[in-house]
Structures are given as structure tokens and as C-alpha cells.
Image 1: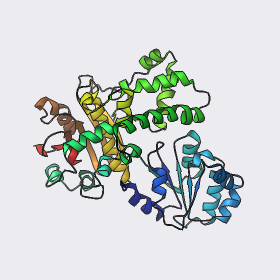
Image 2: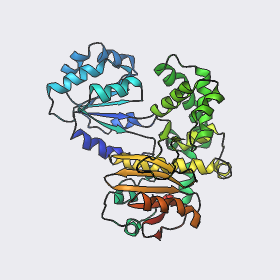
Image 3: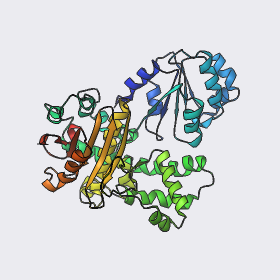
Image 4: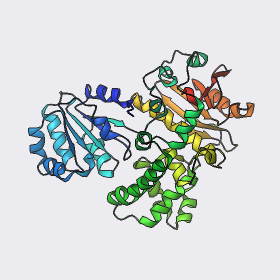
Length: 411
């Protein structure tokens, strides 16, 4: 089974724009596989291999003089000293594009090197696990997100003649399994369960321990397990600190580590021109629904459908899908959520060149009139371009002039 990544097109575009492209993302999301889409004359070095690491890192300046172009370095964060040499190599032929590709899982050194040492020289692609559009092999087709980029389209036109990617059965399967490539490429529930369990062990005991040597392993493991219950909630760092028996700064650091290593998505509170008393604390989601369901010990789809966290899990999966599709197109945007002290809420607010878009997520086929109150008020008060209610309906709907309903499998 082979699935094309939506980011392939973006990678080729960035290679025509920047001297270097950095592909970053959570471990086992498919970064190495994406490198294999480069032309055959590219040289590949995996810095997790001792031999490759020695070739590149022993004398990085000489390495780049000998290899001035068409070089890919996998897991580049394992050789931080390479970045200054890479900057020098790029500057020697500053206007030549498409010379280097580097990949890496997040680390303080990697992000600092990309943002500081290679500033202005690198295009960054964040590669997530598979999106819904990718598992349905329909990422290149007409889509809501592509239509959204056309600001001339009205809300009703945005969904006109839009087709579903697949049926709700496959959508539920994707929701339960999550998007990590390996369980999709190797069928079987037992394989998926064991793979995710081993993945968590590798994340806790290999990546985090290596990146943050002084971390309390036992408490951080408890923290990761606790994230399952916190997914979809507004965060209270004091409560998290008490539950872990750590200080509030340490609890904040744990959330920063989880966000920076791409397993957790921190959603800031919307704060632009807010007239009503709005909640200011961030909320967050585990970024892969399959990982969430493993942490919650949910064995199958039937158990998920009746689980208390089903709504939060569905919501997080939809948020991730929207952001993954935007990222795959290389679209710049900001995201947040909105909630007032009175309980009015919008699950996701997007701001970009496409305008301001409010998105509410409901795991129901028939949203009630009360479900539209928060998004209706937000669209009016914040002068949003439109509101979209993602649901499980059988068809798209026009609720009001600026508010439409869209089943998830149409996304």
C-alpha cells in the first residue's frame, strides 16, 4: 500500500524558491519516506547511522565543499554543528535554489538552528502523520480548503457541488486509528495497538530523555498519560501541577515539550477586538487521535463511540485535519479558539489572507439551533468572512447567509 503525501508538491515548490528546505515533524510521520521522492541523483545521509554521522559531522565545512548541492540530511538535529557550516555553504552560492533538504524531529537545537542560523535561507515544511485527505487518496482534488483561498466565494458557493471524499464508515475508521503511517501500511488491530505502545515508549525513553536529559522521567510519563484526559479542555496549569506534584513552571515546561515535539497542539485563546469577557487560557489536543485512544485504553470503534471523551477526540481530529490541509498547501495563517464567560464558543478561528473564518465542530448529524448561537454571534461581532459547522450530516447545508454545514467526510 503506497500513499502519496500532499507535501510532495510543496517540497518541489520550496526547492524552486529556497536554497534549503527543512522538513520537521513528529517521529515516524514519514519524513524519510518524503525524501525518497527527491530525484535519484540526490545523495542521502541518515544521521542516525553512525557511518553517515561521521561522514557529515567530522568536518562539516569540508563535507559541504565536496557536496555543494543535491544533498539530503535526515535527522539533522543529531549534528547541531552542521548548521553553521550549512549556512556558510549556502551563502557561497546564495542565489542558487534547491541545494539541500534537511529533516528532523523537534529539538531546541534544531528549531534554534532553523530559525536563527538559517534564517532567510530555508523554507520550513511541518509534516504531520497522514491526513484524512491522504488516506482517501484525494489530496489533489477540489476541496473546501482550496476553495477557501478564493475570497470572492460566498458561503453557499463555497460548498456548492462539493463531493465527499469517502463515506462515514471510513471517516470513523480514520478517526479511531489516527494518521501515523505505519499502522495504515500494516493492517491489523493488534499490530496497531502494539505499534502505538512501542511508539510511546520510544518517545518517552529515547527522544524526550535525549532532548531533555534532566527531566524527571517518571513524572513526565505520568504527564503524557494525563494528556489523554486533558485533550480538548481549557488548560489550568495549577491543576496539572498539583496532579503531578510539581511546580507550575515545571507543568508549563511539560506542555511546552509536548507541543514542541509535535504530539500536543496548543490552541491559544482568541484575543482580537474582544468586547465580551473571554476566556484567556489556552486549550489543547493530542494531535493524533490514534495516540489519544491508546492512552485512554479504547480498544475499538464501538468503545470509542460510547466513551466520555468521544466528543473531544472528534473535535481534536477535525481541528488537526483542517490545519494539516492548510499546511500542505503552504498557506500562512493563525489559529485560535474563542469562548466567553457566558459559555459562547467557537472551536477554531482561522485568520489569514483568506479572511477570518469561524469553525464549530459537532459530532451530530443535526446541529440544534442553540449550537449555532456562538458561531453566529462571533461572525457578526468579529466581522468574520463566514462560519462553518463541521458535522456528521449526510449532505452540505446552508444554515444562514454566512454560515454553512459540512460533513467531515466532505472536508
